[in-house]
Image (cartoon, rainbow, N blue to C red; front, side):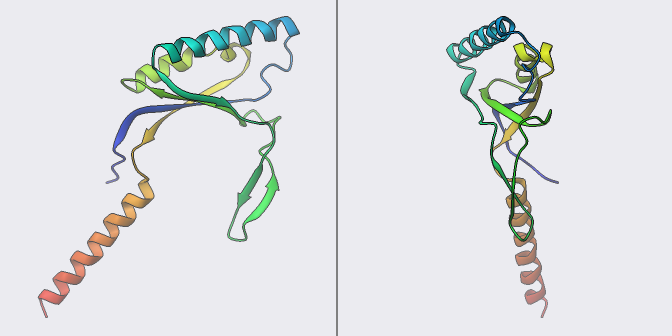
Length: 143
């Protein structure tokens, strides 16, 4: 069993960095005006603690050889273009906030994830170490 110790923090990840590609300059201004009003309202309500856009360029490091490649690719529908960090009562509230995103009407996707209090892998490692210690103590006790 894996316990993540959930928090009241949720992250909205905005995917699709080119949602504005086919919009007119006026439509882009409209969407961004609604976006900023949405964001500022969430900040003033105390429900957003952080939020930033991400640059379109970066590097991806992968594999045992620590290979470095250009990416993520800005033209990708899956590219993360920015995030909001929310502090709300539950997952449903975070989803309701995500549904208000002005970019959704133009192909943007919003991924909602709860922030864990601690790393699942670290928890499994600690649990495994405790089981090894307990097993060693039991084996030593029976000798």
